[in-house]
Length: 137
Image 1 (cartoon, rainbow, N blue to C red):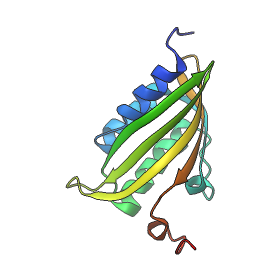
Image 2 (cartoon, rainbow, N blue to C red):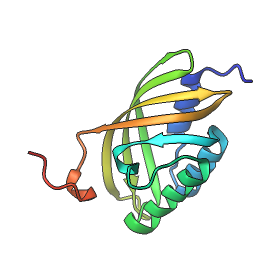
Image 3 (cartoon, rainbow, N blue to C red):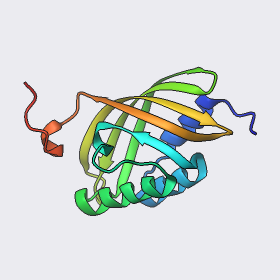
């Protein structure tokens, strides 16, 4: 058991998720439980139920999108016991640091024993055409 607050763990995760893909993977391995539920509309086709699934998802983004780096700006965090509500601006970068995608994301995250055990992302103000979802009406 750890004395670190859930908000500290979540901020550490988002702020150290990159800037390279390898550093993002290292942060996942340091701060995510081996068994984790990572939910979002982007993961519905390929559910993420483990740390290995999460790392594989990052590798898939690297291959399919050219995602070589990440930059996250944590806007807000609020915690109640082991649950954290956060807002972040997420940039996915190519090998030259050029922005491929930008997401404005709210997340609900559960932290158990100093590691993330569950996360649900809620996207808004995204670029839907980039993900094959068509135009927003």
